[in-house]
Structure formats: C-alpha cells, structure tokens
Length: 293
Image (cartoon, rainbow, N blue to C red; front, side, top):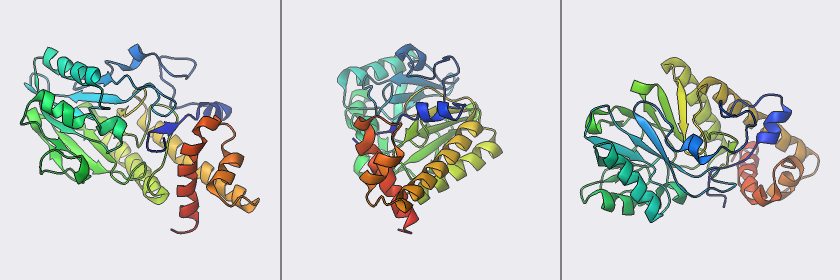
C-alpha cells in the first residue's frame, strides 16, 4: 500500500484553521464526487478519472489528455491502472475530440499510474510509445527526464525531475495554460506518502514553489484529487506541513520512540490506523533525513 499516493490530512489541516487544499467548490473539504474531477482541467488538459478510489488513491487516479486546440494529436499522461474499461474510455475521449494518441507519458512508475500504459499504447496504435524516467516503464527506446520538451501535436510540455514521492517522479509544465502537472508530488488534498528521500522531496517542493512563483503558475493538475487554483498557497502549505511533521518526529524520538512504527503511534494519531503502514514509509524517510542518511 505504501507505493500509492498519500494519506488524508484533512482533520490536521482543519485544526490549523485553514485548508488550502480544499476543493474551491466544496465547503466540507471532504472527498469530492466523481463528477467534480472527471472532465476537469484547462483549455488544453482534460482529466479522465480512473475507477480505483481508495483511502490511498483518493477519488482515483487522474489520467490527463493534453492537446493543442485544433491539433489532431494528443498526449496522454498516466493512463492509470490496468483496467480495460478505463483505458477504453480514455481512448474514446481522445477520439471524441477528433484526435489520435501521439504519445504516452508517465509522471512516475507506481502501478496506479503506469500499469495500464503498455496496454493503452497497444489499444491506441502500434506506433505509440510510452516515455518515463525509469526504463522499466518505457515502451520504446526514448526516455524522459530533466529539461526534455514534448512537442507532439504542436504542444509544449516541459519536464522537471521532482524526486521524493518516488525516485522517478516527474512534474510537467504546460506553459500555454500556466499549469503544473504534479503527479503525486502534490495531491488535490491531503499529503503524499514518501518512498524516496525526504531531502529530495523538500528540495522538489522548494523548487516547484520558486518555479511556480517565477513562471506565474495558475493551477496544479494533480495525479489524484481536484485541481488546485492557488499553487503558491498549496506549495507553502506542503512545505510548512513537512517541516511541522519533521519537528513532531524529532519530538517523538526525544520522548523515546525508536522505530518508525513507534513514531507513527505518537505523531499520526489523527490518521486512521488503516493508513499507518503507509505513514511508516514517510516516517522512515524522516528518520533517515534526521540521521543524515
């Protein structure tokens, strides 16, 4: 389970008196309806929500169809799990737009984002390739990494490496829409589980915050949950939350906690116990960070 997206932090955020990752159309801040997320996006990006909701994947995995207006080709980001009905629906959506799939990209290799990529590429046509940072998830010889620019169908999509959630996590910048596609580095609500290094993750958040301010980012299109229309506030919250959790872990260790599980039992009392195994992954990353590993 720790290989999936995140843990819910809504009660923690509400206790602070502000929930910057609340969907702007919902007063409760709770999980949105499918209709809120399926079909959301920008002028060039459209979400097709995968039917795999859970405590870890929130409403499900967001598959993104991205295309320039008037273009006959689309790029599909994160086809999602190996669910035939979902993959068919993504392809039908592309075709309903009068387009064909020119390329498949992965923000990272976790199965809720990538497991269906190969099957989807075959459904879309024999020449469609899958590009990813990790060679294990590619279909074709061409990889994907820092500084790459995707121009399929006249699109401009810029690639940044943002490790932390996983070592192979990527973020995509869609400048024509001032949109950041964040994968699982930033979620529509709650916080993400760390499989990679906390130091890397904090560096990625700091970089995204500085980039979003400089570039004038208007929205974050996440891998799970609703889109976020105040990127700076969201990234500031993510950074502050991680620093606060780190201080809590330090305090738990000072009070005698020695293992990740013992820290979770002290620090994550606001998170349902079913999510504690996932929280242990993030705590272990924090312990490694504090120990200089």
